[in-house]
Image (cartoon, rainbow, N blue to C red; front, side, top):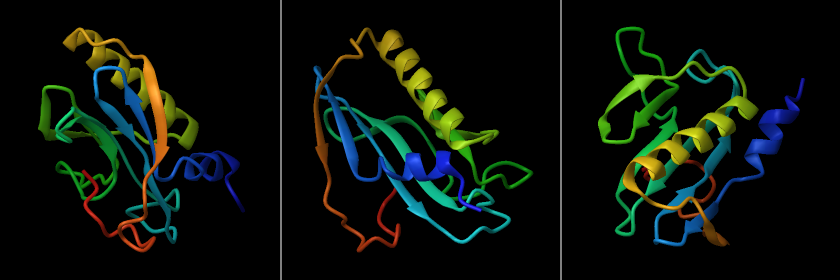
Length: 134
């Protein structure tokens, strides 16, 4: 059965939204087989980057985190190196949570969350999802 919300989120793959101050929101998403680690059939990386390309915060499921080895996790603003488990409840909730966390990060930093430009990145991994997810 196809989850329409996952399909919709997969449509964001390779999109990057640039804020007026040069920060960017990056969307990297790939369909995967359904496994214990990725029960939603998707690998994802949704980071917020600064002007130098350094990840400021984000959500991904590239590796296990915590005692439960949960793969879905959040890298919170100001503590990006200390990820915390994220309770994935659906693709729409993930997108909403990412934008809410982005808004909080921007407010904390005194940065306007104003999209100045959108572009589409090249696939630097041949579509495998094996490139750097940061």
